[in-house]
Amino acid sequence: MKAIAVEPGAGEPALVERPRPEPEPGEALVRTLRVGIDGTDHEVIAGHHGNLPAGADRLVLGHEAVGVVEEPNGTELDAGEFVVPTVRRPPGRSNEFFERGEPDMAPEGEYFERGIVGAHGFMAEYFTSPAEYLVSIPPELAELGFLVEPISITEKAIEHAVATRSAFDWTPETALVLGNGPLGLLTLAMFESVLDIDRTYCLGRRDRSHPTVELVEDLGATYVDSRETPVSEIPDAHEAVDLVYEATGHAKHAFETVDALSPNGVGVLLGVPEPWEFEVDGGRLHRELVLHNKALLGTVNSHRGHFEAAIDTLSQLPEWFTDELVTGVYGLDDYTAAFKDGDDIVKTAVEFDAPAGGF
Image 1 (cartoon, rainbow, N blue to C red):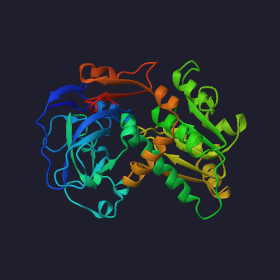
Image 2 (image 1 turned 90 degrees about the vertical axis):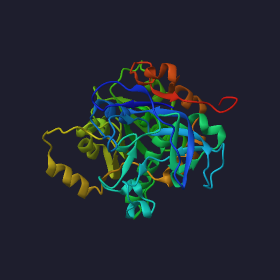
Image 3 (image 1 turned 90 degrees about the horizontal axis):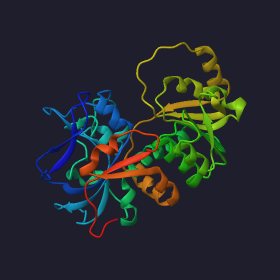
């Protein structure tokens, strides 16, 4: 079978031949339909993140996937059922985090991540997976099933943000998304269309002619150009916000978020920055957090429940939004185009196959 693999840090993704996998007991064989590409894939390709499976010289990419069950192999799944795979797997042994259904809370070294850390991904014509890590998705949503994984990341982030405020009455009226990439845009659409937050803002570093800026404004949010208005100045230029969602990986934003928050607000950090030393007024930030009941939290990955919530969220997103968000779906004969950057590119995917009769 064909797969897209990379030697991290050593070049571009390549189309390779690999044996079709055989499912073990408790696993199903899944025929891959589409696999999305995001910033983590580019970090893996560049060698900045992730690592190879033991004994492998290349890593099969892909962690945002949707497929169809080819062989249930005695599991409770049905042949022809559309599924989305979760990402984390036990590292050759079970542990308490997987046993209680919270693999997203496992510390480093206690998990593999398909297509990222220690395990091959889903960017192949077929993959196998234990049935417990395959989440059923309705046929009418399968075409966009590769968006479920990134939406699940935000489902977890919001769940944890709300949990930090659960000791008192907290209903966010304002929210700020840092980053106008695909994850930031999906989150903004959730804030606008699903959570119905009154006033939303999105910060980026692109000119207003860029399609992502147009998407921000079409969603009804206010675009903030960070070259003109830094995060810490947003309260003066606009207003302090109840919820900040950071998806840039720009290390200074973690500290500037404290200034952007209103009293009782919470900032959620998802970006993974490179090492960077700079000066901050730690005493002032400490006072802000304490005297104004503010909170910062970090979050990564998601579990099955977040995937299930993400499927429901996907069904509620406006069709016009997903049409404009997904700017390209490419077949294997043109897969390299899916990895390119450009002013007209927002979110892309590789299509390995399609259901009988098409999507």
